[in-house]
Image (cartoon, rainbow, N blue to C red):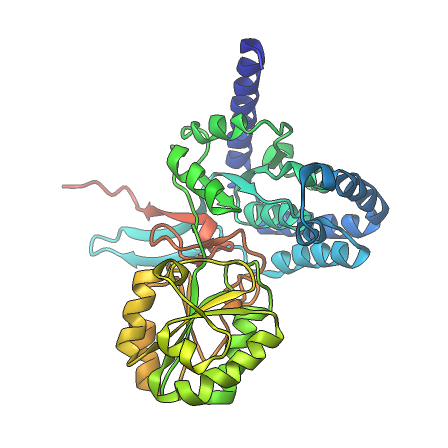
Length: 424
């Protein structure tokens, strides 16, 4: 790339961010009805233009082998009439959610009569970097606009045609309903250097949200000059307590691990109390092996489970994203908690127990964004938690934690109402 081209790329990124910043100022005062109408009409038009979306998606699918995509990755990339309907329904579900902007979080009247309110406001401009899934393009745009934020979408090149077709419809409808055209922008270049340019624009972009592999997320975290909402990995645990119902434990563990292997809220490590290990592990092993799962266990586990492989310390710390699970037998809930806090990724951890006191201790002591009690780790999801579509899951403690929906893309300001008040 020549010097001129590099300068052009930087200028393009700055111009895109400036237009997003201007759009965010307009969005901040647009009422909820206009945003909802945009979402509902966009959903209708996505259904109406199914043929156009499928044609664009076919271009991406034809190029998939060139990018070296696996069958699983190609499946995530593929649009079908049913998936287009699902995308449209997702927009309608966001439209049905309460508008967070302008919500008075709390208010009080001071002794001098000054009324002080804490009011929810947008963050401003979101730079969203994500994997090659067309539905994510629509979900992210919907969440950002509904929460009053302009968004710059930087999707994977593998879904470029599909994302472009979706964003074209969203922008077209935005103009018709009085929303700024630049409220949703799709980065048009596949040059990876563009990401670095955007991450340097803290004066124009308020938050960066990476969604993809750990390498991408670490790069964004290291280079970003603005706050980043993120999680690095999803080494999630299920702990089967001494007071667990064994049948329930099997259902929860198998669902947590086998429902979908390559997602961040899948179980990667199982802890079992020694009091139930002899009864539980051989039974569970049959179910896991039937689902093609390899078991890597500690010494006691290997004695109980035929075919189990000896686990290393690295195995207990690994997000496998595939058909492998690490297993350890523990002597107490305290040992389970210590193991999770040492090896886990602060994402999602579950306990199966009939003892409410133990469940509460686990929930209070495990340092994770979401704790499940007698439920699968797979429920840590914006839709499952009633947030509507999510833009990602955060394991940070500031500014957002867990699934990030509408409210997680807001901040607040204090507004004080007086009547000629002056400070003495």
